[in-house]
Amino acid sequence: MELFTNFPLWSALAAIFFAQFVKVPIQFIATRQVDWSLLTSTGGMPSSHSAAVTALSTGVALETGMDSAVFAVSAIFAIITMFDATGVRRQAGEQAIVLNQLVADFNKFVEEAKMWQKKEEQEKQKELKELLGHKPIEVLFGGLTGILLTLGLHYLLS
Image (cartoon, rainbow, N blue to C red):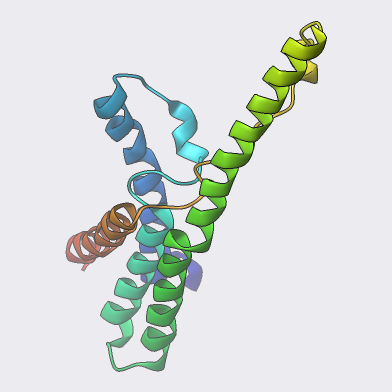
């Protein structure tokens, strides 16, 4: 039953759910379109990865102190995760954009050159996911989301 009283765990999970949910109204404000698929997608504002790891680290700091070894581990884990979100994953998304454009250009060339008939819907190839990583501002706001949400939860629950 100790699992149910693990504040850092629950604050990290709450940060993930909050960050994923808040993407829907943010996208609506930006585009005037409701996109519920954002609840389970990667990328976007704010970064739920950053929110989760900063909430976890903040929760650990509040429970064990900033001088604990567990806080050091969680802080380094958060730094690596947020660095990866803006680095490797972001570059993979940029490559997906280029590859999708190459596929689209190639398909257009083939269609025009050979006058192929259009394929049925189920035969169409799925595009690569382009929104894999985060812009630095998305990681920043994800991190702030995690910290502020955890501090708020700690205040309310303590």
